[in-house]
Length: 194
Image (cartoon, rainbow, N blue to C red; front, side, top):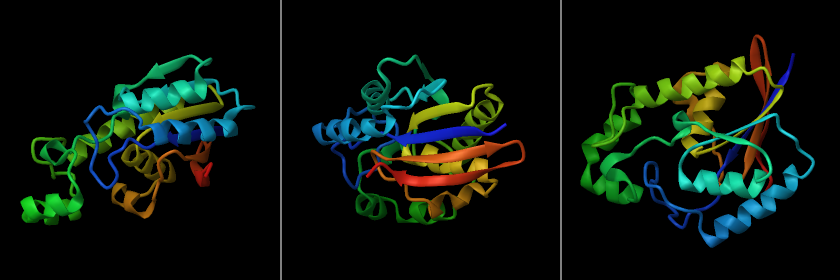
């Protein structure tokens, strides 16, 4: 049996060019408008299950897209916690912690963001989500989450190394689709809805 998995990234938040993981920020006005436009792609869609990150920006996106459908909040869908790098630009992070940035670039499972989450722990919890989605008995599932989570889920389903997540650019306010089979998956769409 083929399952359709749709992964939606929340809309813009008003923090362009900044690392926002654990910061619980709302959608900006532009982000709300972006998701309202995206909702036109889901008018004839009747998903059997909708899962969302507990973060405000995802819950707001989910409410705009699927207000009449029962939603399940899944804590494992949270974005990675960047610790003291939250809300900072890449240049600010490089200036403050050049050695740590070099270690981060290696994408080692042992790396932890300063005061934040360990990469291995992040991958482990996203893989738990992947396991649950794989075993879901419904054939049409939608997930509303974050860029890092979506890229990690794509790698999980395509059986790629987690470090390959850097190969995928997932834009805010877009969705991607995967067809899931018993022995693997096919990425059928990326950055749809723009």
